[in-house]
View 1: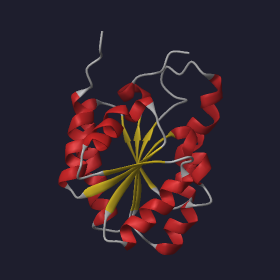
View 2: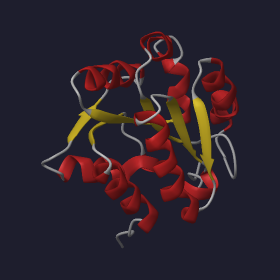
View 3: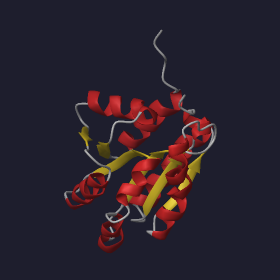
Length: 172
């Protein structure tokens, strides 16, 4: 039986596209499956598979320099891979938007996910990235809308943390 996607994920994709996001950088992740699949199917979007998350930081810098808007889709464990590259965002002062599917919180059964899951917010804050957390489906679209404004109008670095309450805990 095929699972239908939660409507909030489709709403997020539509919002991102309406607000000019054309580049979707990602490391494959079930929490971002709908966004990734929609970007891959959209001829007006560029979905770029990464070998590691920090490549996405550089890709978004290039997108901004080329006049495009992008988003980095990653899991919380990937935040640790980006720490050094986030200095590029701070030093280059370019807009940065990432959607982070969280692990290591509500209902997590994999003990290996807890260390980075718990470190995401303090690590991002230390690198000057503002974190907005989404716990419920009705918060997703307005939060990402606010993040788009903060990133692309104010030029800030923003991470939207999609909690496990929202995306569901993976069975382990």
